[in-house]
Length: 224
Image (cartoon, rainbow, N blue to C red):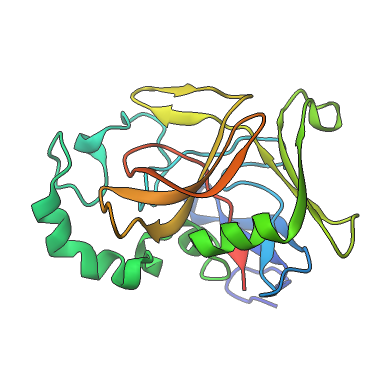
């Protein structure tokens, strides 16, 4: 029991911070039988069901991108400049992402679940891809939403569904229904203007590619 929140604590359920700092029960986490034992959330952060797209975040942001344009001038860790500011990023990188992984202060999954979950690393996306069956689904369960379903190899009743949420770029969201983008917590150490994410289309999945950190992608949390 969590006396501060007045709710029962289930280790397979996250507590999502709502309006006014009120916490409400969030999402079930699924054991897909992965080698590491990692549990994957059923829903995106900001979504109320597995078929909702949820919120979009620039990499390292702890607030959803709702009104601010997704471009370098608004991107975290860029000091407000309109192009990638390598000098500024180099000066703060060791505070933000030592060893190439976002710290808990900049991990929206950690922050929104009161430390009970975190953003996946790119290695965890790769583990998910390598150790599940996956298939593109049109109109998942009659919802009208397309996406990829990752199914446990040890128990086919267990799965997680990633809706094709598109991506936020500029002031809009493009390619919903045919494209999906989900940030990991991993910086692309070879190209530090970019970070790694799960990228998919209707016929392919790339669990470890990178894109500029100012793009707005979804977040799916994990528990170790």
